[in-house]
Structure formats: C-alpha cells, structure tokens
Image (tube, rainbow, N blue to C red):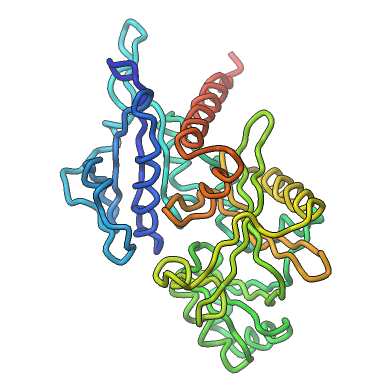
Length: 367
C-alpha cells in the first residue's frame, strides 16, 4: 500500500475494442464512486493503438458523457513495470498498485486477456478470472455450456469466417432454418456492436459480413418474443442477486442496439424494477445465479434473460464486466437492491483483494 495507508486502485479503461468509448464513460462513474477515505485512484487509459497512458482524475470526472466525444487524454505513457508492487528487504511493499479495477469492455479487456496479464503480474483485480472472462465473452462457448448444463437458451448456429467465405450459400441455408426474425452477432463483442436484426433469408449474408468486421466467429440466433429482463449478481458469502429490471425498446432498430443504448435518449425505457410476480422474480434470480456459477464467474456480472408470455425464462447472455455508465443497468439494479455505488465499488475491491490473497497462498511447488 502507499505511504498514506490508502489502497491504491488502478482503474484501467479505454482499450482496443469497439466498446472503447463506453469504457471511458464507465471509468468515470467508477472513479466517482471510489471512497476517497479508503482508496487512492491511479488512472490508466489505454488508447486504441494500445498505449497505456496516465490519466488525470479531475479531467476524467469533468469529461463528456457522450460516447461519441469520449477520449483518452494524450499524456506520458505508464509502463506496466510501474504498476507492479515492489517488495523491499524488510518485506514492505512500496510503489505500484494494490488492486486493479478493469473497466475494459469487449476484446482484450473482458475476454481473459487482461486478466491473464494481471495474473502473471501478481496483481489482484476486480471481476471474473481468466476462464470465466473468456467464457462470458464468447457467446458461442457460453451458450453451449449453458445448454449442456440444462439452462435454456435460444436456438443458434455458429459461423466461422473461413468456412463462411468458402461457401456463403451453405451458411445462409443453415441460418435460414432458424425462426425469423433472427439476430446475427459477433461471438466476441458487447454493447450490441455488430448486431443486426434479420427479417428474411435475403438479408442474412449482408448481416453476417457486417458482424465479421468485429470478430472471426459469428452466431446466428433465432429471435425470441418476450420481455428483456436483466439482473445483477455480486459474488460473496452469500452472493447477492438484485431485483430485476426490464428493457423496453422504443428505437426504430427494433431491438436494444448500440444506438438505442447510448445515442438515442428515447431509444429505450428502463422499467426499474421490472413488473414481475414474486414467483417470477424468484425463478429469474435463481436462474441468474446458476448461470453465474456454471460459467465460472466471480466478482460481478449482469445476466440478461428473456421472459416469454407463458412464463418460460431463457438466458440471453452474461456480461462479466457490465457497464458502469450513468445509464447502465448493473449499478442501477444494485442501488435498487440497497447497495449504493460507493458501497458497491468498495465491496468489489475488497473482494478482489481477498481473492488475490487466496490465490497467492496456493502452492506452486511440491517442495
């Protein structure tokens, strides 16, 4: 820890994914919720070329909330070696960062890559580990594991770029067997980046090619007629599953697209809490927690469900580093469940430190 005994929290944000700007907005809110009596922030912004740059907290807090204008401050680089705590002869740890709060959405941020780097560096971090992060990011692997665990998901097929390019007609034919409208999605992306709603077979090839701009693997998934329900999960003893929220889409895209989420103020309405019976909520919370556990998650996650008219619940996906923007569901749902932002961020950091100590105690030698 630093000399003033505060815990030094490295907030990592930006990154090289298509969700770069959303990550900046999330970091702004994590910083605002950081308890100044306990924590000392160290801001590291990663620009889209991959440079790690020290950031000014005051400038971040004063920055825009419009994702189209959000930018990393161009400052001197922050080498990774400066983040790693250094232990002296007396056993005292000096310099560096005590724990990292990665607010990196998308590839190279929440897909296990950054988590692996932090594991190698020996720095505790908030959120799921390498395995849980990788599973949660890959919609194909995620849905297969859920399906095999008996958790209901929508029907889908997976397309890989090389196979698609070799025979686009075969891919279109396979996708056409799903019920329309269907959705084409990059397997490894979030915030609805690269997603299209497809109403007929004639639109499939174009939509798939669009999704391939963001990943080498694409899923085609049948549309589900139902309400879009989201729940927040906070790991712990015991874990906390929030009340449910509902996304009511009002945007011309006809689904919860990137524009509906972040650019159009009237693109969607949030029902907080969702209007559900006590029995429906209980079933949704149990399904969210089971999903969290089956997918090897830790720390936090947002679980997105569909609630059909007949009461059937299906899992749409899990987000292992959900948005923390001013309009994001995760912090809103937790606050609605009695956990305010400052307490939420503090609990996540404390949990990361505890997990780091447990991992540090694992033997790596039989000697």
